[in-house]
Image (cartoon, rainbow over the protein chains, first blue to last red):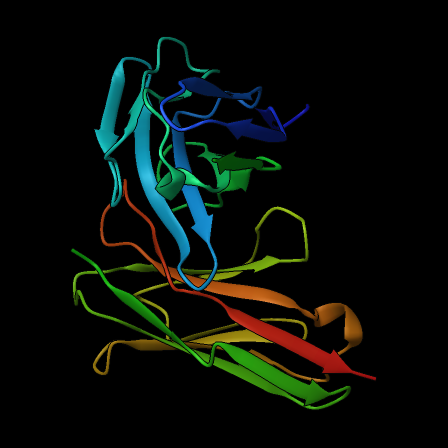
Amino acid sequence: NAGVTQTPKFQVLKTGQSMTLQCAQDMNHEYMSWYRQDPGMGLRLIHYSVGAGITDQGEVPNGYNVSRSTTEDFPLRLLSAAPSQTSVYFCASSYSTANEKLFFGSGTQLSVL
Amino acid sequence: GENVEQHPSTLSVQEGDSAVIKCTYSDSASNYFPWYKQELGKRPQLIIDIRSNVGEKKDQRIAVTLNKTAKHFSLHITETQPEDSAVYFCAASKGFQKLVFGTGTRLLVSP
């Protein structure tokens, strides 16, 4: 198993550009989530999904969209990037709920100029 | 919503000493408390977790204690080693959908 795979590892955007961060898992996990990590602020939940076709907002959802068309994939979309979205983004999954071991991807370092 | 505070933000110890990291949570309904370790440039990884029906849990050199009345839980690392140097995050969850993390503690173990 590859586990949780995130692409790209690094990305630089200009303000106003759009992009999609990809996340895929091959463990048949129902629960998937996106976090952003900023210095001194820990990991903050952006969006999460408890199964295909079901998504919901976390602590900091503004400026981000998600969809879950399959169990395996959970992409994160930035529609109009802003400098405040400069961060490290982690995708994480678990078998069924957030109350179990989360498996994290390797992260995407995003810079918005 | 749930709020998790973590202290200290940095902790320096000598190899062989013990290290203690403390977290408090705001929602008395929270029932799941994991700890994650993140080495420099790596992804967070679960090292230990505890549920609200248990007061203490140990795994070799690490242990977690939970005080539901005071709404705080702590990570204890004994006989620290240089490879314990990392950022440690506590987290809390009251349901099955949202896990809220603390702001992290950078632990430095000096030889």
